Image (cartoon, rainbow, N blue to C red; front, side, top):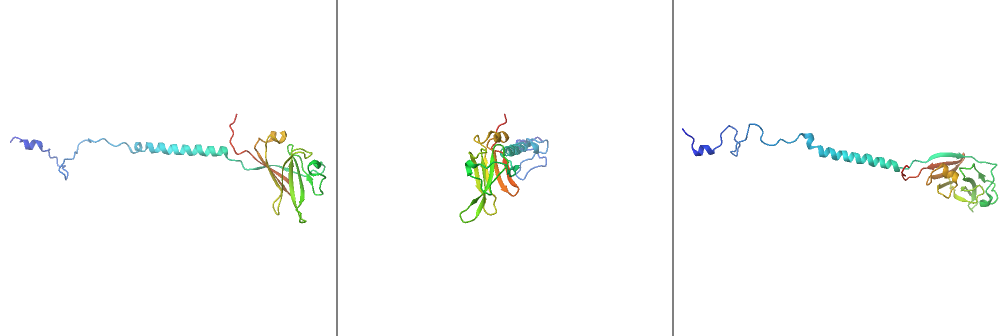
Length: 193
């Protein structure tokens, strides 16, 4: 028997007919295979690497501009033989004390009368031994000690600027041991020459 035209148009039955009546191939794959799992994730890996790199660079940049915590750089002791700066304060008060010079700065302490019979401890930092140049001053209150803070500028003595870079902050704190001196480096990053 010869095949008829209707038999020629019908697909060959290989036993794998789907419910819709189409034949599904069982031989070699005819569709393009999907790439390996890791190839599909390469863009995600590049994105993660970029984010991580950005975080590392950002953290490094933050460390460059982080201020260093203040560090104690000196303890000044009273110098009973030092001359009192009469030009600034007049005659030395009974409780006035002058301390060791600190890189061209003169430091003095004294009690200030508050007007109600009480007094409070005060601290002054001067730019010359004679007291002609006043840098900063402050008084204590209750349990808080007399404290003075200043920033190094071109107006302060050269000896101080030779020891500390410009814009360094200094703090002088009067306590029973003397005058504690703290320094904090500038908080802005500067390019290295």
